[in-house]
Image (cartoon, rainbow over all chains, first blue to last red; front, top):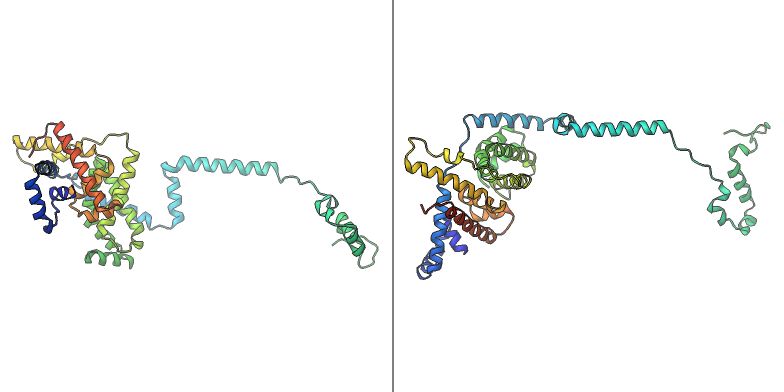
Length: 165
Length: 184
C-alpha cells in the first residue's frame, strides 16, 4: 500500500521501482488500485493553483511591517494598546469595575475588628505546669506582665510614674 | 538547512530586520497556499499567513536549525490552520471558485470550462477531507514536500503519512466519481 501511494505521488525510490512494476504486472488488484490512485492524483494536480488579487502582496507586506513594528515596542506599551483594542475592551472594562468595587468595599468597611485574647486563656497556658512555676518563680511574674501589658511595669527610673515605653 | 536560510537566520539574530523580510518574501507564497487549501478562503488564508510570520518572528531567535526553515514555517502554518479550522468546524469550507478562475486565461474553450468545473469539484472534495488528511494531501501534492518532511511537520511517522494519504486519496476518488469526474 505504501509503495502504491509512493508510486502514485511520484516519490517511489529508484531501487524499488523494478520490484513494484513486477508486482503490478502480476497482480491485477494492485494494478487497478494503482491506476485509480494515479487518476486521482492527476486530477488534484491539474486542478489549478490559487492566485492572489492584484496588489495583495504589497498590502500583505505593509500590514506585516506594521504588526512587526508593534512587536518591537516595549511590553508595557504593547499591553496598553492591546487592552485598548475592541477585542479586549469589554474585558478590561469589567476587570476595572470589579477592582474599583472591591477597593471601595474594602475602604468602606475598614480594617476588621480583632478580639483581644487573654494570654492566660490561651492553649499555651496549659503547658505551664505547677512545677515549672515553682522552679521558675519569675514565670508567674512574666505572665502577669504579659497579661497587663508593659504599662504595668514600675518606672525603671524611679520617678513614681508608670513606665511608658 | 539551506545555506541561504542559515545566513538569513544568523543575520536576523545579529539584529538585521531585513533578513526576516527576506525570509518572508521567500516563503510567503508557500505559506499562503497551504493556508488557502486548508482554510478554503482568501481572507482566512491571508490572516493565517500574517499570523504565521508574526509567530515566526517571535520564535526565530529560538530556532535551533535542526529542521529546515520551510519545514518549520509549514509546521506553524498547519498547526494554526488546524486550530482555526477546528474553531470554524461548523462553517463548511467555501467552494472556492477562485481555483477555477485562476487557470490560464484566454478564450473560454469547452475543455477549459470543463477544467474549471473539475477544479471547483476537486477544491470541494479536498475541503471535505478531515483536517489532518487535508494537510498531508496539500503538503505532498501541492507543495511537493517529501514524506520525511511531511512526517516532521505533522509530528508522526512516514508510514502514518503514507497510510493517511492512501485513505485520503481513496476518499477523494470516491468523491470525484460521485460528482461525475472522469479519469483525465
